[in-house]
Image (cartoon, rainbow, N blue to C red; front, side, top):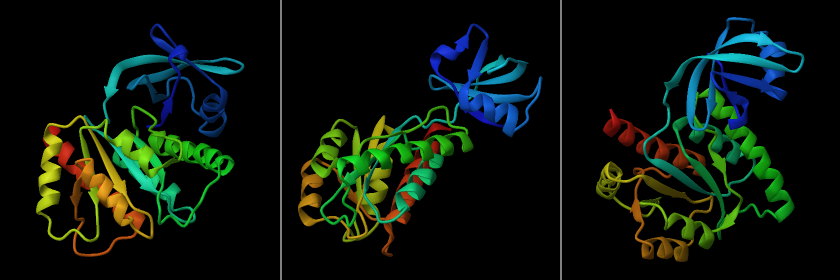
Length: 247
């Protein structure tokens, strides 16, 4: 079943009026017809709808069942990702949105090879937000996770301090006991920040700063993971623990 996101003002009583790109996609790309059903996500909820009419530049969908499915995690996961090389960030965003992150924060860390000026950062952010939307549609999310503007490590840490829990996978951390303990803390948390270093890893002073911010430094196992693998692994671990507790 296809999933589309709608603005609050497109909902009128028991129906949605969809125009623009999604209208074109429904009518001309997917060639959907009267009576076909799809999900419309709006305001953090998804309704089951069926197409009732086509207009010149819009489609009308009747709500068949409100709050049809809830795919959001009860704990908001913020991924603080050190800027990686090439198009790895696109891959990380796509997969982590599918896994359930609430937001992604691209972070300029000391060992990042990539250096973005303001113009490039804005262009990248727009591209990354588009990827988040596509991944949210594919995975039938109720929301489109926000890709926050590229920021410094210190600014990212200030944001993380407002969350209930901070987790930092670090290659120099031995054993899994700290990981198990951190994951168990998700039982009482409403929000968690996960810091992932770039290809060059964290600088020593960055690790010192997160420790001073009461972050839980954890291990993802005995093997050294690529930055994109580390992000997906850490988010997957949290997703499993949260879903296990919420069922």
